[in-house]
Length: 141
Image (cartoon, rainbow, N blue to C red; front, side, top):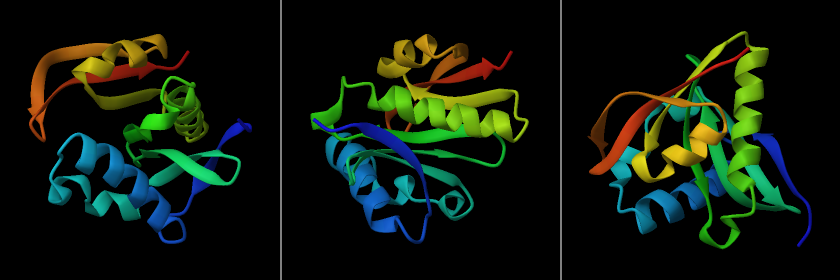
């Protein structure tokens, strides 16, 4: 396996790869309706692609308000710290913008992953696209 790295992605230029990964993870695997997956915020968000060599295997986005979302890693690459690398890139980008607080809407089953990265659950569980989620917040030092 070659080195996994994260790079900034451009919504227009990297659209096919960003869509391929999110469609595989959210729409195909998790049955999220396509109309809920795609929104107007994609055009304004900062996007990240995790790649093995030149092959994109994961993605995440950072919104202008410091919200991290759409964190997704293709099934064959899970458990290899790809999600960690994506989250570190998004957190660093938020901090470089001066956003000392990062938020995300985490699927309940993934909450422990985000807790390892310094996020804490705030509030009660809720449904988003029919999947249980919790709001999670991280405060930078």
